[in-house]
Length: 522
Image (cartoon, rainbow, N blue to C red; front, side, top):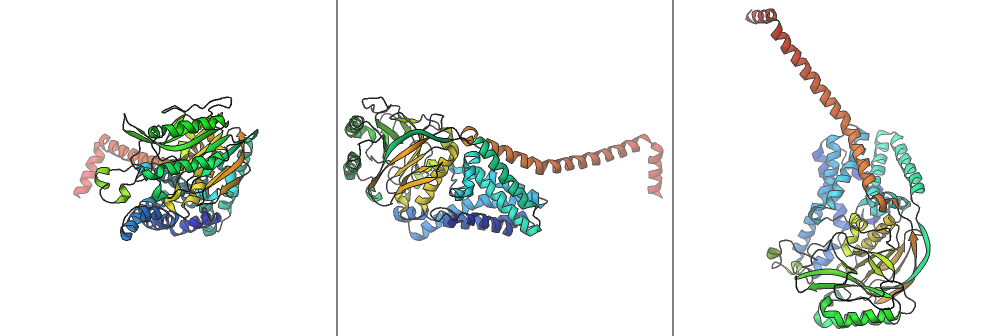
């Protein structure tokens, strides 16, 4: 499974891996199916998110055995979800087609729960493996969640076509793909608009160990300003990464005011990440702010502290941005007491940023994984999907590549160009219509200046989200459980009807009762 995701992107492996999973979980008992489903899930996550251990080992301050134990517990927890999906399908199915249907229903429920419980961790869903496959054609229609269930359907149909030696299951798959293709052709009508903008992405490559050292605040801020200054000319939008300005916003006012005037003077706008500690409420937010021109016809900058043209991160990362049971955990190890790990949560739905007349749909780091959250902040005016991150925590692992792949899937769903800027990579832009990507090398302090063509029209996913998928899941559940429910009710009714009439018969005819009594005595 790991090789089906970025940076390897060997997407057919995901289907073959799921075919194998269907085989090993095809057991008589739900308990056996759960056992093998758990093994599949543990391997899927242990290798797939092994990059998490990089941050624990390098910055967590824990002994290796303890850090490995924590990783094992995390992967074991995540493996529970596929185990439940396979056990559910085995427990309630009575035929091949029912097991296929219940695998789809089971994974729909468990993947939904995996993205919600304990703040959610919907990383490495099956659908992300198909970001660069022909199946990505359906992303604007059914989203990544729909692609995940489509993968389960394809894999389970292939398995039962082989097991039952019957081509009907494969024909059903072909029919479903054909219906999706025709529906997509009639409903997805997004196209490039005539408007092109020049964007400048600045990657500072600041060492993680230096980011929150107070003596490094000014050198970091100066570095980003100097890298930008030489590229101001003919640039519509400049973007800096998450917390590119490490100083809290109120104390960085002189720097921000100067940057605001410089951006407006050069006929552009700058979006940057910055921590905002509000002294009156003691709340601290992971924030994006806009400086320079707000509208295309503005002549001056518009920045002032706590102005409304900002975004405060909603979906916080456990341990990294908030610590549950912090009074207990923080004293235990540096892992639970990292710098900037006490953020407050912003509102779930916020206004798009407006920069030089562009409506920018923002997401900070981990938030890009939550498709419902991103879609809830999408509007018909949204021009660009913009996400910032700092993946320096994960070193030279496959984590940053998977993160970029997830961001590109959001762009495919919403059919908006993606601009992603990070501290040390992967920084780049992506066009979901032409499916072209431009990136700059990781671990280098450099910039990317490129033209971006905007897109007009709305995708079905941007309008309806996951509603059509849940309707389909509900219909599949009805198809499987309604006949069984009707049979159960009919059997119960017949049994009660028979007993009722026997009792009435015995009550009405005392002669029979005497005969019965006589026979018993005899």
